[in-house]
Length: 116
Ligand SMILES: *[C@@H]1O[C@H](CO)[C@@H](O)[C@H](O)[C@H]1NC(C)=O
Image (cartoon, rainbow, N blue to C red; front, side):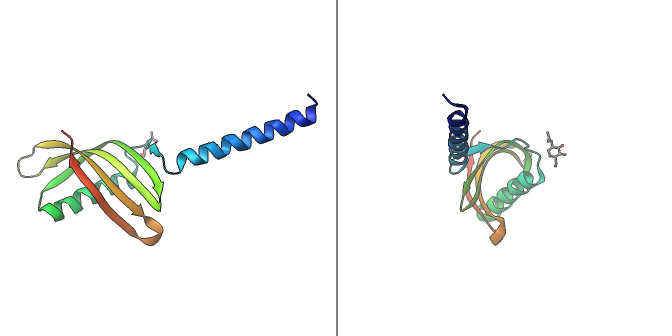
């Protein structure tokens, strides 16, 4: 193969790869690398606060154990958190989903489920 067509092939295949990775990050769930990132903790705190208001609970965030994000019309955060009941100091694990659209200042608790 001539060097020229070889480099064209390289360009095309790297374009395809780039496109494939954009596809994968849009709509798919991506692991959050840093679970102590202030933004992630803020989202988790928000979820606990909203849940407390909705069901009149008294949970307090202990830690974010695991997390993923998904690009939608904004960002979905799916977090596994540990939270403690402030009255009985009993810990539980929860999976929470928060939708965040910072540029519109919109944030919503989608779900808050006990997992353990
Ligand atoms: C994670 O984020 C926190 C807060 O910004 C920072 O202090 C810490 O160094 C980060 N950890 C890693 C592994 O990047």
